[in-house]
Amino acid sequence: MAKSNKPIFWSLFAAGGTLAAFLAPVLVLLFLLVALGHAPALLSYAQLHAFAAGWFGKLFLLAVITLFLWHAAHRLRVTLHDFGLRQDAMVAIVVYLMAAAGTVLSVVYLLRI
Amino acid sequence: MTTPNPDFVRPDEGLIGRKPFVREISKTGWYLKPPFKHPRYLRYMSREVTCVFIGAFTLLLLCAVERLSRGQAAYESFLAAITGPWSALGLLIVLAFAVHNATSWFNVTPKALPVQLGEEFLPGKYIVGAHYAVWAIASVLVLYFAGVL
Image (cartoon, rainbow over all chains, first blue to last red; front, side, top):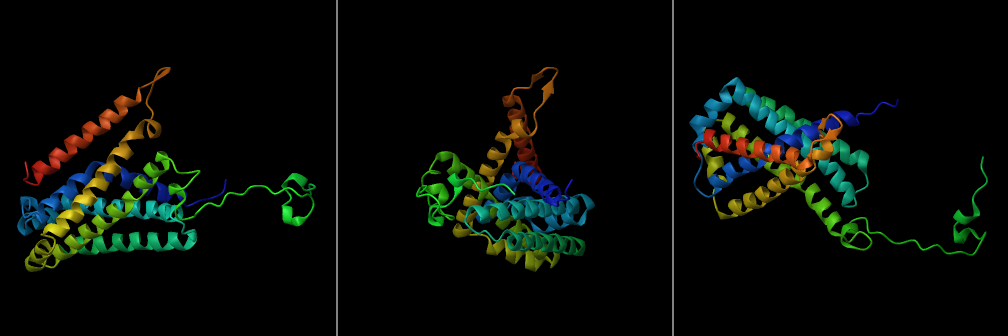
């Protein structure tokens, strides 16, 4: 059978899509409350820093950020094709590199906390 | 080598004089024009563009974590920067697309995760319903943990 890298990117897409389906609306709602001037207690510096300092908080934020990014990157690749951009090889490199950069940055930022 | 089928020879190649109708299809706006002008393609495109909003929100999360790692003053100026009517409007639009991603994702779970019980398949409404129930519980738990509820 021909080897393909599709299963790797597709499983990241599916995992990210499932996590985003369950969590993205409520996480966006938390930031919407900030925008409306009613910042939730968890998003205060003291509480969020304490949350991100623990290993559970780090793993949670890492999973959310990286899986959301890989989900969005893979779907963006397909969507750009549907909007008429047919340079798939280049599009794939750009979107996956952005997701990889975001993954590395999130690890760096989380380890600094 | 097979001999070419004369029915598929292009008219400008001169073998026969037929002129097949080739419909022009727009690469960028195909879902807005015939023969693809149909609600199912608009639904498909609306589901696919949710990724732009999920991606933008994730970059906002990444910014928040970066500001958080730089200390209290940096993080609090980030919170101040996203407070206001325009970011509220933007986040409301992101929220609508995030909900659209969730509902469109859960509504196809009977196809993605069919459950077989003996000879029968579990009706799809139970699989979809279970996902909506978990979604509601997870959202309430996050709101409770965040101190909103």
